[in-house]
Length: 104
Image 1 (cartoon, rainbow, N blue to C red):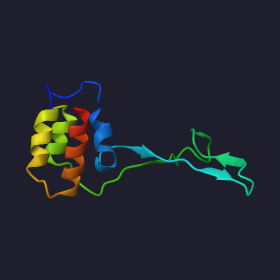
Image 2 (image 1 turned 120 degrees about the horizontal axis):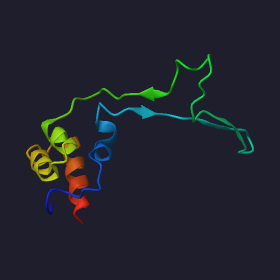
Image 3 (image 1 turned 30 degrees about the vertical axis):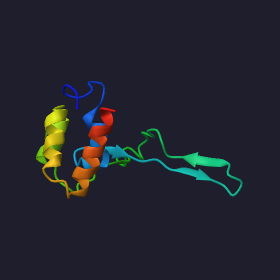
Image 4 (image 1 turned 180 degrees about the vertical axis):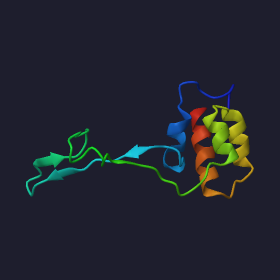
């Protein structure tokens, strides 16, 4: 990895769903039997009946590793080294691949 990683890359996007601190949202498109759009849920509908039900969620199934935190701190080279200390871990394998692809 050259230097300290590409400055234009947001580490939050690299971690994606594996970051338990990321806030995600969802939307639904509904179509009829002729594939015509009936309605969609994206966009905020801030009426009295929907204000408390915004479609945000967090995936809290894991905790950040030391390597993840290095990545979030934009210490790309150190993060890659830290992921490589646990090469049998699936998450580490994915992150090694993502970080190495940044330098291609």
